[in-house]
Length: 303
Ligand code: BDR
Ligand code: CA
Image 1 (cartoon, rainbow, N blue to C red):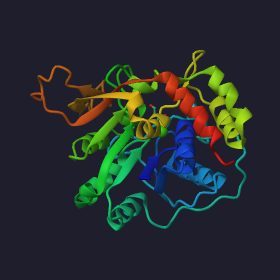
Image 2: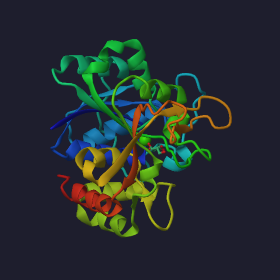
Image 3: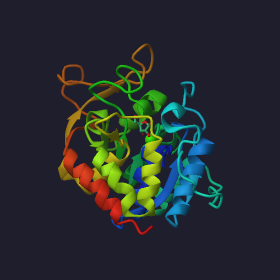
């Protein structure tokens, strides 16, 4: 089993990633933490709790940062809807977050485990940066970070910046340079691995989980006729099927001001950082395998 902490901002694609991680027995989700991103943190927390309840999972949810470290907060409700998870009635019965804040909860889980744990951030990296700043001694307890965000080939927020890094570029800079192995699951692959209309049509025929995910995705204001990107799911796919994603190490700098704020700049020529690297960047993906994965995972859900 892969022991993980998922730090997220559900969010429709976060919901799909959580659904798979909570139901695939290869994962042991120790904690879910939430952050402001697609919508405000009170909403992302509520959405995470709804998913935990939907799948009857026994996983604590801890609420995290309300705003980014330095940059003013801008949500993505125009993409994910006002609630962040529209189109499905989860009912009003779901749990409450634990009393600890996300950073304290992450720290406690990491320190209590004998083996290092994998972090999966699928929202802005504010909580992770706060954790690394408040408790730098925790770094050796983090096995690796597999993070959705960034791009070395153009943005989805501005011409060059991807949403998660754009939301909190200062946090991204801290996370990339913490000396922990980081895999950047960015738009370079997530915009290739579109979930096709054919896959989407099959989802509701599988089970209630498939109906739920199809309903959310119908309200997702991203993608086009060729299909929809399920950005955050690519982190989970990579952990289970590393052979389907090709990566390459680069030095990644984050632009923290000006018109290119939030851009992840890869030192492709190795000229600026003397060939040194800090991030393993996903650069290509088997898109057919990704679609098969979506269907297999949802079919296997016990709901
Ligand atoms: C990322 O931004 C969010 O809107 C998605 O949930 C995903 O994490 C894609 O750029
Ligand atoms: Ca997200």
